[in-house]
Amino acid sequence: MVADAAASTQRLDRWLANVMGDLSRSRVKALIEQGHVTRDGAIARDPSEAVRPGARYTLTLPPPAPATPAAQRMDLSVLFEDDHLIVLDKPAGLVVHPAPGNLDGTLVNALLAHAGEELPVIGGAVRPGIVHRLDKDTSGVMVVAKTDRAHQALSEAFAARDLERAYLALVWGVPAEATFRIEAPIGRHPVDRKRMAVVPKGKPAATRVKLLRAWGTAVALVECRLETGRTHQIRVHLAHAGHPLVGDPLYLRRRPAAAKALPEELEARLAGFPRQALHAAVLGFTHPVTGQALRFETPPPPDLAELLSALWPDWGTIPTNPV
Image (spheres, rainbow, N blue to C red):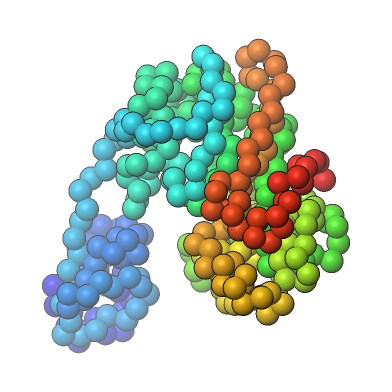
């Protein structure tokens, strides 16, 4: 479709929604952000850009997603499994459940192949058995329910924070205090909707932080424990406190001043780390059926372990204890 002169004052998403007629503006906005709209053959990803009169816009609808994810066999690092639940070590780079842009190749697809019809539907057809999730590029321990009873009990435990969760995070700069608590509400960023932010009307959020190791004043390894479970909570809170995660693609916006204190080679390694340096190291909870106390702890994956070893050759001797 070619835009006429009357469209020049309109946002791209609003104009396309009006032209299409059968798509909502929010749906059109999502399609633009996912790269399904072109302007004169080039992808247009900004829903708020002004329409250019005379330009030819093309919107290509992706094929509909299947109502139920397909089972796909993948190697899973299973730490524990019985008739009621699975505990696994999720690798970085694996999306937990299907969503626009990641319709397959997710942990849910792998779980369906692993457990099949055992997974409960109480979590929804797209998220069967999922009780909590980790960001795509965050590694570490996760628990998945295999029965409705386990799903309900585990969901209640996560909601009540009646469990133990500890994360290892490599951050820029060194906190002034050995232990501290960050309490700041989190909500959608007012401008960039892909990001979360500390906002006045956000949901209450609190994170306890413990300094484990420091490299001069440049970088630190910290342990984080969640009192709440907001989207990107650790990443947002640490960035808000002035200590963004090494490698974080969303919340590390520029080269940190603390990086100047590092040798050039070491700074290059940290600056080139391709994902947020965050690992869900510990998960402890009461078995929802047997009542057994379960606790699982995993070391960081090789890419993060190599980075930590470059900073502190003996970092593996650091205990993960409650703050």
